[in-house]
Structures are given as C-alpha cells and as structure tokens.
Length: 366
Image (cartoon, rainbow, N blue to C red; front, side, top):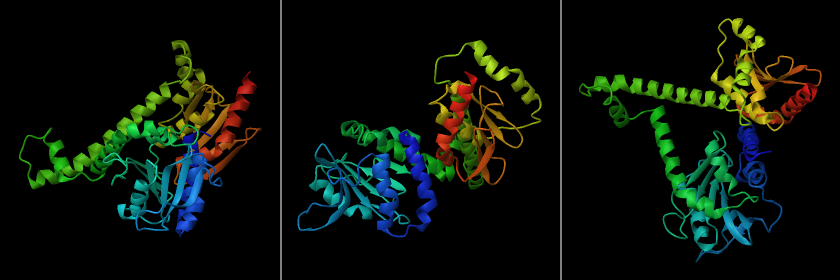
C-alpha cells in the first residue's frame, strides 16, 4: 500500500478503538507501534532500529526514559514521547523531550497520543528543541499535503536534511492554516472588520458588526465549498495518463447511454461526498486501469462507479443518500454486497476487492 493508504488504515483503527484505550501502555501497543512499523517502516522488534524505554542521563537527571528512540545509520535520529490516547497534548507533556533532545544526536522529536503527532526540531537554536511543532499530523483529519513530509522520515527514504530544510516553511504555513481555519469557523471582530471594510463604506457600528459576523461566516464557508468543487472538477478532467483526443473525451461524456441517463435523471444532483468517494475509488483502481476509463453515473438511490461508462462493468456503488452510508462492492457474478461505512476513509479497507473487480472487467474487455 502507498503511505497515504497506510495512514488511512491506521486512522480507521484509531477512530474505532480509541474509546477503549485507557492507558498510555495500551496506546503504545494499539496505535503508536503500528505507526512506527506500518507508516514509517521501522522494525519495532529490532533494538538496532527502535529502542523502547530509551535512557540517556541528562545532568542530575538519572534513569529517565523516553518511550522510543528510532535509530538510522547507527545514530539516534527520532525521539518519541507517548501519552495516553484520550489525553491532551501540551508543551508541559514534552519536558523529557526537551532534555533528551539536547543530550542525543536526534534532530526530530515527536509528541503523540496515538491520534495526533506533533513533530519538533531545533529551528530557533541549535540542539535546543523548539517550543512549537513544525508539523502536526492529525489522523482524524489527515492533511494530504503533509504525507510527502512524513515519507521523508520513513526508513525507506529517510531524508533528514530535506525535512529540516522545509521545517520552517511547514511550521509557519501550518500555523497560518490553523489561524485561517479558526477565522473561517468563528471569525473574530478584527477579521470581520477587515473583510467588511472591503465591501461596506459605512461606519462599523455594533449593529453592522453583528450583521457582518454572520455574513462573513457564511461567505467563508461558501468560498471553501466553491474551491473544493473546483478542485474536484479539475481532478475529474485530469486523466493522469496519456492525453485523450477531443473525440475520445467527448465520447466519454456524450455516449448514448450517458445521454439517456442524463435525460432520465429527473433532477438527480451529485453531492460533494459522492464526488469525493468516486475520487477515492478511482485512485484505488488506477493501478489496474487508466484513470480516464473510470467514470461515475449518478442515480436517485446511488452513485455508480463504472469502467468505460458501461453499466455492465460496475466497480462500486456509493449509497450515500441516507444517514447510514454504504459502499457496494461486487463479486465474480456481479452480485452486489453493501458494507456500512461511517467515513469515506473506510473505502480504503476494500481496496483489494475494488482492484480485483476492475481487473476482472479489464480482462473481460480484452
């Protein structure tokens, strides 16, 4: 699996199990060791790669231990301090990391509760761990732009110099995104005043502030929705393969079957979740078929993902028009089985079956 798929699988595990994990030790076993092994690729049972309960005496502090030290090229490169799954992560939790960071060769320190991973380095002063992380990975809401940076810390392509060089930019961009995100959710007075002054020439009274607070929040959400939809539309146009002729592209959306379905859709509207689900399915099966061959066709009760826009070659069905969502997958006889899902990330759990279905249709089409 690709790194993004491994992260999605671990995120699903954390989501379903975190409520039952009550201790720090259980958090290590259930979540953090799988992160080190399946995501970063280090052998947690090889003390030459991963040292549990790592000890490095610091000054008068003797016998203190850090939860894990990751070794690469015979040197400690990454220190990991763990907290229990349901516990918060604060800078006070990182006191041991601060001390050990200066006493070892490690340039990366990680504070985690198994769901949130805060990555630190020494941008502000050499050999002194920064007070703020340069990267925060939240498995409950994975930022795909961070996946390549996580990849740099994996055993397979460990590239410390590259991640240190990009750490400052990551740090400030990450903080700016969180500040902007907070303003989009609950804009403060200064933000409302700044934006409203661009469109309103009157005096910024209390009544105006109250009026524009709601308008700014609504406009912000609509702006985000528009941006997401634009990106999805662009992604759907991107074949990610050899460029198709204009005739082929036109045929893919103007075939007789598609036109007939469009005429009979009776007001069917494809939702954002259906488009996102389709994108996930297409990304999964593109290892077996060209992406431009995978299309969606929406109906009232489900959104079908088809090969070659042929309803006799179904890859999946997205039953999202209800409170309980289902992913429909098909066996060798094209019999559909519906699997309940609570989030779109769970689609990755059926990746192998989806690929097998796509490959089966491809072989049949030859």
